[in-house]
Image 1 (cartoon, rainbow, N blue to C red):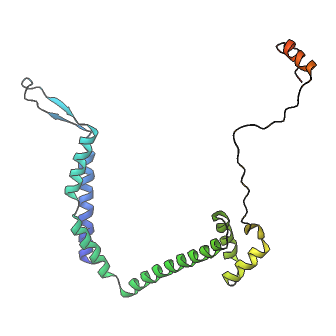
Image 2: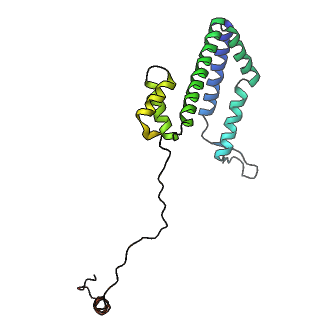
Image 3: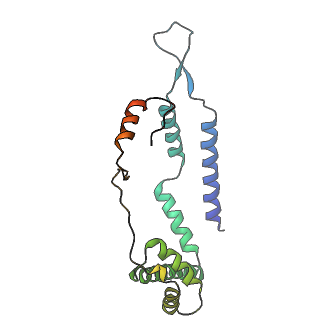
Length: 189
């Protein structure tokens, strides 16, 4: 590190320590002398949590470096990078974008074949593990597993009513049900 970096780091560390030490001693109450009280008496003023937090935030904001200074520090660090580091970073970003693009293209091809999203994720994983050209592997996998290609979905709907078949009762059963139906020992048929 250069001397300038070391100075900035030391400056930041001392400011952090000052902020921590300043906030550690307060508990949210401070003695305050009121004008209406008798001589010699002190009244403790209590602060609400929001007032207490606002005071801490103001103290921290006054001790931290400004946004401009932080931006200058970041620019300085970027200027210290070597050309090789910059090229390496750009190469990594390019490879990440290329991988993401390839993945999206493959997923698009699978979805165009008529698979659902859930099946598409599974097929993408399975076909991606195979060696060779992706399109060829996709065709062979879907030929071997035609269950993924079925576009028909069976959907059952319910109306909320139970459908049961009712058999007509004979007159004798109706008579017995009416007469003894409330009895605990009688079983309805």
